[in-house]
Image 1: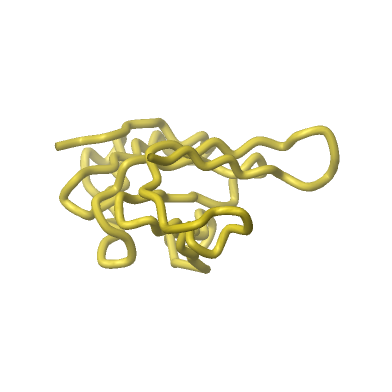
Image 2: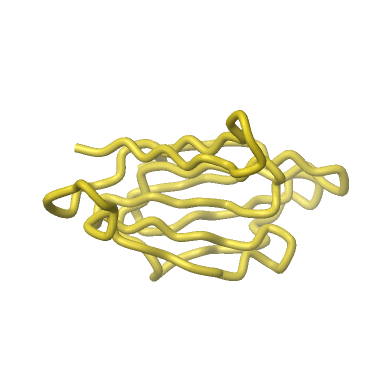
Length: 116
């Protein structure tokens, strides 16, 4: 089951990102009509994703409480991850149901994670 769809803002091609309960995030090139990348094995059942304000990073959240970061400029290479249990103030891991990444009022972007 697909849990989220979004176009990747880009100037070189029309790309669609899909996330699903099959533990994958897929990147589709709609001009070529082909899947160009498949991100899997790094998070559980994918529930949500968001683009960083500078459009350099894709952030992916999953039911297994994991959040992973991928470099949009380097063939979607994974550049980091963490579990929600690592967030100060949370008593336990919580599944990630929504992610919002925005630039905020200063130079630092803000990552907001909604969970159960």
